Amino acid sequence: MGDHKEQPLRVGAAVRRRRRALELTLAVVAERSGLSVPFLSQIENERARPSRSSLEKVADALRTTAVELLAAADPACSVDVVRADCVEAESQPRVRSLVRGHHQMHAQEFTGDHDARREFQYRNDQLMYVADGAVEIEAEGRAYRLGRGDTLYLTGGVRHRWRATVSDTRVVVVAVAEHIEAVQDRPRP
Image 1 (cartoon, helix red, strand yellow):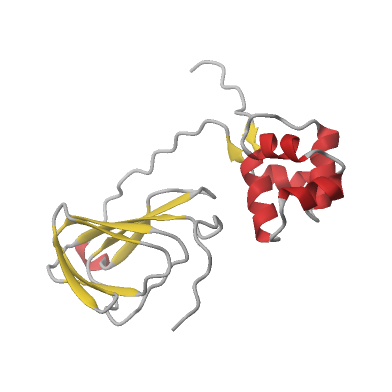
Image 2: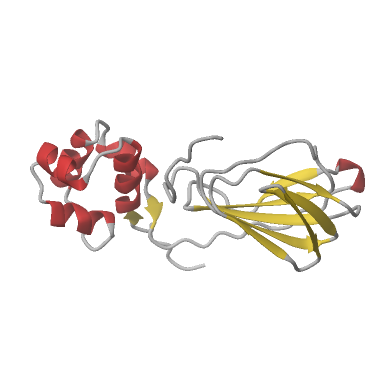
């Protein structure tokens, strides 16, 4: 249906993820690569596209390859539809990913009940939205009851557990991806 051109890649996000994973500053990467801090900042913020030579210098400084950085890059423009599938009632509980691929956000839909004893703790922030039914959430020593349309926001590091209190409950959980350092690791009590 028309000519589809390949979308350019946003390599800056991959560079930033790799640099942060190695706990390097822009100044260290600049020193190792021979490129300037402002130029590296522009690459990470998608305001400049590195030449092949510059990308190879950045990759060397990050102890990886240009090919690996390109493979980890995000599409410049992407639209992805995840269709609801028909699921038999006996297949519950279930978890369905609402975002495919390696992105800065994760979203999952939980249907039915699950192990209410399981405790969750994510490094980054998350939002829980009750699409149908009702849940009970225990977080920071307090219990919260949520019904259809209610949301609960949890900052990174909050230990919590939850359970469905109504059959056929659907909860959507949206979180900042674990590979994105939104908050510092907090010491465990």
